[in-house]
Length: 195
Image 1 (tube, one colour):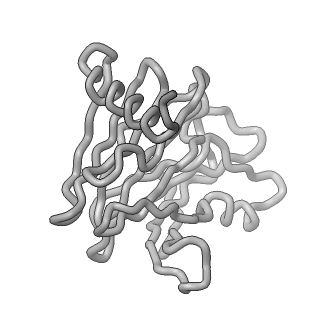
Image 2: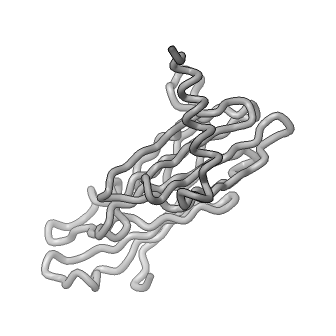
């Protein structure tokens, strides 16, 4: 009988070794002298497998045929390492699920909590205004940006007549007592008539 841990290692090894045959993409980042992170993305199976040189299976993300994963993004913020994996539902513009992780120097992944700027801003809308199509985000070293449109209820789907809100997020460390080590919060936002 194969133990659960041996089974997980064998499955991970099969996933890693069959990437050419199964149409997988491999993304790697060296985090520190002791940590190298590997993300295997399998588009045909809708699977993301995150492993390191110290652990064969840190995290596995699955989705069904109604969604897909964007390519993962490694980025730095205030000299710390982070990983973003975005899960997007087909046909929903920017409506998505963000999988955000802080990567410690010893290759541990800690989830990041965040409140979407569009959800925070929706409390400020007039009764005849709505936010459609979700929030577009970009992640680069030391810069996380967002934008979203504001529609009047009678506006066509293509054209938010009330313009766009653009801004930036920041990552902040939380208190030691909290479950999450980092939170992503809005650092600035402004209105513009163009995207």
